[in-house]
Structures are given as structure tokens and as C-alpha cells.
Length: 499
Image (cartoon, rainbow, N blue to C red):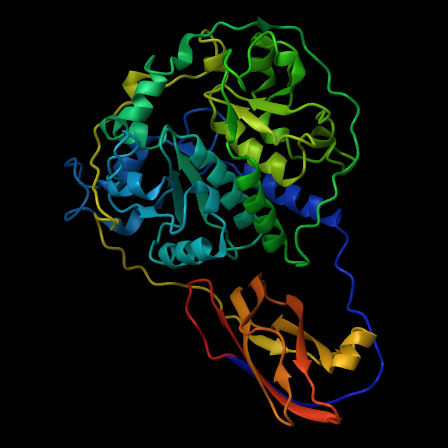
């Protein structure tokens, strides 16, 4: 807890608060964090060059150290990653009645609010920090139904991590290829039917493919991003990706002839971006598609500009695709977070990728990738117990000199005083969930602002944030004494006594 005790004298000078930072500055922060995540050299086994996801066999080997086919006593949890299940709660518990989830990977924790869309909500980030602290292997593996929406969660969480949210070094963040479908296909009968010529007949189309290259148009203007007044890169990135998770819902568009689907007769109504390699693009791509390889999408050109991003034509709805849907789903989050979208429609991915557009191309789910690895039901993670200790620097909060003013003549007439408080982190560790919990005053002065008041969700060492509290000041009062108190947590979710 921090505390400050001082005397505030009142004057009759009206003053406005400082303007928020320019909105266009947030574009570069978000793009840099996204590109930093995509540019990481994969540190885990991958199935496709340049694609950072873990296969189910690798995860099983990490969890089942003694190779007996079970996960529990006899296995060593020291090298286990933190597995996060981003499906709906009834899929995790095994109570779903539609075939969409019959349990979860032993040891996997659930998202505490909704699904993948809430991955970077503050409550979930606090939960992830606390759980990550128990794992000596600082790797996070996200798992959804079929390995698609977990890539959206991966992009959001990965960008936030690279922006500094978890401190330095950032944890390794990846997603499980084919998700719970690949882990135990019997646990996902509804999804299995969808991707193996079942009720929706996904891999049956042979829509047009061409080899003619299409150049990118001239770059347009930078979108104006102004989602938050925070100057913290991690918070700017978190807010943008959180908004994108919801703006992208649903994150995909199906190929087909039904209403709202795309096919080779209406594809010209869309801007189509192929995020595969240049070699894959040259071998065959959707008619009219332009090519920006996945890991070049958010990069700067030699002149320091985001030419690739700004060259995407947003005058039409934007569709992104890859061989499967994994890379395109990740791109969808980054593009919508940056405002690279049509004014009337969010950017979406092609459901199940190029293989669903034309089954002679792309990557489709194979029966050889089905496994029968163990699952557990219920609301508890099950499996092993993790007991590693948390390490990280401690935050230290301080309050700067207040800025006291009457914000307007009407506030002055009503006795409504404004005070800008600047809170800084003077410690050597990240500070989270910072708030002002109370303000005790004399001379009849009371807070008009509802407390507790959130100051910031994250504050790096040396960082600061300014918040405005308003006070009801009785007529005739010319000074008052105030005692402020506030709280914060560290990277592990522990509270400290802060000066």
C-alpha cells in the first residue's frame, strides 16, 4: 500500500488536464509488439517452417515423462509448460452435449471468464501470471477445439508479452496444432465430423486457383489508433488486442455458396491477402490475391514505414488466408488491432484455409494426426501439482506532487475540485492492477470520485500514470488535509507493502 499525507490549498484558477498522447503513436507500438512476436525464432518443435506451434506428440512427451501413457504420479512436472484451455467452460468440464468438448488435457487451466476472446482481460492475465509462476518452464501452450482460435489468443497474448507485460524475459507462447482435436479426437466428435467430410463437408471445394502474381497497391494513410490514454506499450497493445478479439467475432468466413460465404464468383468483392510463403503463392493462389508472407506482414521497410500493412486495400472487406487457418487467424487479430480493416466489416480469415477453398492445395487435418491422449473432466485442472516458486523484481509505488484546479466555472460553483495525481513505479519489477483505494480528508471534504479507482493495469519500472480525482469541497473551506492509499501486485499476483 502507498500513502501520501499533505495539505491542499485552494485557488480560484481554472485549468484543464493534459491532453492524451497522439493516437497515431499507438499504431507503431502495437505493430512493433506484434512484429516482435512473429519475428521470434521458434524455440519449440514446429511442423511448418516459420510457424510457431507445438504438435501434440511433443506436448505429450513433456507431460508424460515416464512414457506410460498417463499424466500424473511418476511424471516430473519440472519441464512442463503451462497449458491454457481457451474453449468454453462446458467443453473444458466435459459437460457439453453437442460434441464440442468432452474434457481437457490433464493439468490445463481454463480461461476464467469466457473463451479465447478474453485472453488479455486483466482478470485472466492476473490468473495466467499466478499460474505461470508455478512453472519452471516458462512456456505457455494454448489449446482450443481444432487449433484455430487458439492462434488468435496466441497472437494477442504473444504481442502483449513482447510489449513487456510479463517483464523480461517474456515467456515463450505457442499454440497446440489442431488443438484438442489432435490431442484426443474422440473428445471432439463435433469438430472431427466438421473437418473430415462430415456434416459441413469442409474439404470438398475446387474453387479457382491461379499462378499470376498481383502487385501490392500503393500504401495508404496510417489508421488513427487512440484506444487508451496509457503510455505503457504493454497496456496500449493489450487494449488494442482485446478490442480486436471481439471486433473479429466471428473471426472467419466459410467458403461456399450460402449467404455470407465466399466462392469464385463473389471473391472479387473482397481484398484477399495470401500470408503464405512467396514460393507457396507462386505455386497457386486464390484468384486476385496479393501476397504478404505471414512473418513480413507487420514488419517495417528499410525506411522505417509499415509499407506492407498500409498496402492492404481496405476499400473492400479484407480476407486473409494461409495453408490452414492457423497463421491467418493470428494475422486477423493483429490487423484488426491496427485498424487494417474495411470501415463496415472486420478483417476475417478463410475458414480452414486454402485446403477448404480447393482441397488440392493447403493443409487439411489428417487422420494420422488423431491421438488418444488422456483427458480429464470436471472444473479442476487434474493431473500434476506444480510448486515452482515465483521470481521477479518488486514494484514500488510513489505519488508525485498533485495538480490542483477547478476544471470549469460550473465545477467551481458546485465546489467540485479536481486533483491530478501522478503515480510512479520506483521499484525494479513490474507493477500490476494499480489502484487508489481510499482518500481520507478533513474539513468536511469528501471524494466525489468513486473509489477504489483503477490507475493502470500495468506499469513498468520507471513508468507512471496520471489520474484525476474530484472532491466535494464545502463552501467557505480554503484548505484541507488528505491521506491517500493505494494497492498494487507484482508479476506473481502477490501484494506488497509499498511506501
